Length: 263
Image (cartoon, rainbow, N blue to C red; front, side, top):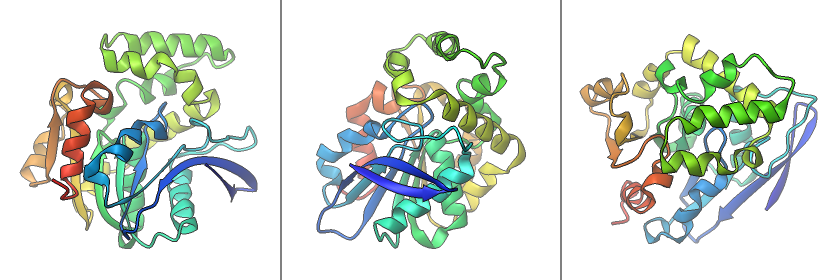
């Protein structure tokens, strides 16, 4: 479904999924860089989520949502997009689940509007420069920006070095899931946030229920011990890297559903 949002003098066509039940509580899923709302599609048929409304959408320039060469959006703009979308649907409070870039966006939204957030599940969202090591840092540092085709070829080659099925799934239709300009714009913004802002401190100090989910192969992320020492609930997804919903989808969605008490 489509929703037109006016922002910075531009009309953005935002593609979304909204599964509305008779319950009042809503889960909002925010996808990662180079991904789309379809990553959360399996939750719609998982009974553990049956008592919740589910809203998810493609960020501008991602999936089926539009972008404009007249503007350059960053993560702060995505936070405001989340605010506009939640207001449009009359959502007073939401449960946020964010993956990667969506985790960073959700973190900043929860930090700025804690009264609107009931809980926050961070799936490998950016908390440290270590989280920029594969995607955003490569894009940010890429100097040749005149040829889209060459750029996407180089970007896919970089990701294929990980040699795993989940990365194969991710790159299989990458250029269809994100346009060149927003990929550059968002990546630059992500790197700046990781360099300049105390994101881990933001997460630790959120006054809402919060959880952190990561893939087994990333258990050496430098801040995992800090989360453990601060008694932040966490979940390690076996046999997975940055995309646990691709690598181990049944386990991932069942365990994620348990967080909401639907056992």
